[in-house]
Length: 563
Image (cartoon, rainbow, N blue to C red; front, side, top):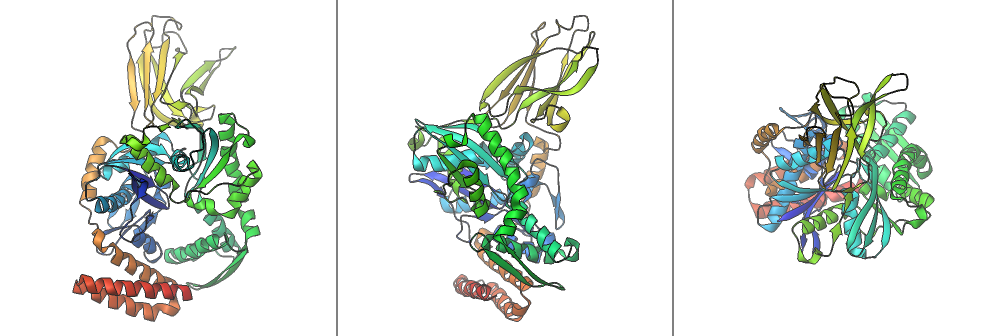
């Protein structure tokens, strides 16, 4: 069984391609969306999902979210006695998703297709693969998120010969892809994006404005109080999608908060973020050699795309309203399920062919000698241009800069800047030269080969000897080695994780504790409910626990609507 996984910044989903089409698995709480949040409980057990999300408010020092933005870095997070890398935190989310899939299927899941932002760098893609290995699965393929969304949309619509733009704004990343569907082929023409632009940035803009108006600073609040304020602002952001104005009131710590904002001001605050979106949109169209009017449809995916100001931006730029035929929260997961079906050669999908592109330009660092003999170093020489259809192989010739040079060092980069210092180094390869030969005789043929999974192979062959030197860039500085992955996999396997059967109870208590933290006026009744439910759990009577869980959940629903 190959599953499809949307490993998101805010939420993650898992499913497979069934006889009826893509199908998503529900978690222990009955939801398809699992919050991408990890927390460590007081007893040392690891929590993932809804239970961990509520603990962002009540136990901020023991909880972490939005770690997808750190993929590809060596950043570490302290949770309890342990330190976690982003790959390990993502692996814990993946393990939770896999447990849900295995509970539904009744069998072990060993393979997966995982979606990644189209503009994820080489290091970020490799970190995602490492997360899959740490979760105990083989990652059959990484599929770009807009491409996955196009699969979900395209297979539903079946509009032959249509060109459409996928606008994917998630919690932490922004991607755009231009695609075309014809004769069962889903062809990606261009991708662009921003790995550090998403719904969280709109929330940051609200928080900055709120604190500025109230003449407060973030440091004026404790971590718990900052979590409470951010939750109120998140609710305000969502409310502004339906209402012209929203008010935030209440006591947070020693601060009596009273603030209001309307849609017009929110649009003004968000304008710098919207301007940042224009550049990737324009770049994708330019690379696809299309004008806005040549697009048949614009499809919005990603939870943050629900904001009305996003639809207005699309209408201004393209002169048409976007489509939402697929649930924006589930579109990428549905597409990942379709990709999993393609990978497993599902008979219903034999007629679908999927192409993709290389999102970044790949090249090497070169030096150039000017007319007066001055040598300029650090120039980026592209070998594979961005948005080339993959798999792809390209070859270029390079020479030493001076006579009697003993080696040629190929420093390999990805990026779009003409100077390598502003791009990302991927690795290097040393080629021995014959110092007795002339510069022209020491010509080296360099071939870059980039596959559908984002693996770059570099071959360098001195023309005079014909001996081939090769490097496969599977590793980047700061990335986990194979030995590191084996060591950390063993450590993760020893972590205590609450059984899936207990997740409903844990999540319910976490929600009650979050409400206790937020609402002073309801603390007495919440304390009674929490104490009573803990006593019921100690009976280990499943029927009694289920009955009281339903009553407890209903009581919390009722209380939250009144507060």
